[in-house]
Image 1 (cartoon, rainbow, N blue to C red):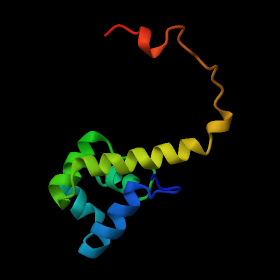
Image 2 (cartoon, helix red, strand yellow; image 1 turned 180 degrees about the vertical axis):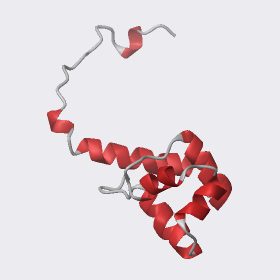
Image 3 (tube, rainbow, N blue to C red; image 1 turned 180 degrees about the horizontal axis):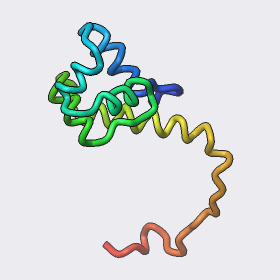
Image 4 (cartoon, rainbow, N blue to C red; image 1 turned 60 degrees about the vertical axis):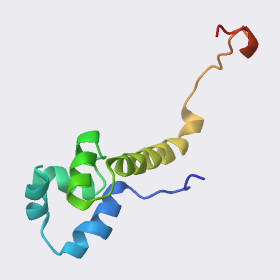
Length: 103
């Protein structure tokens, strides 16, 4: 069951990995091979986890890249569901039934 308010992956990164290390963002960004600004934006929840960043985080901290991307997806979808009422879409229904679809 999806969480109602899942955490941003940057929050998880900050609280479970970066803070316990006791190292600066500059040092950690160098180890990750990204700019300090990029890492800062992620841990301060102003940037999402890209597939490339997910691989970097996986290599650095051991959590699977898929887990980082799944966290990002859950976070993004949760935020968008809060705005779902404002998204106007007309329903599309195919004329064929499931049994009529080609196999």
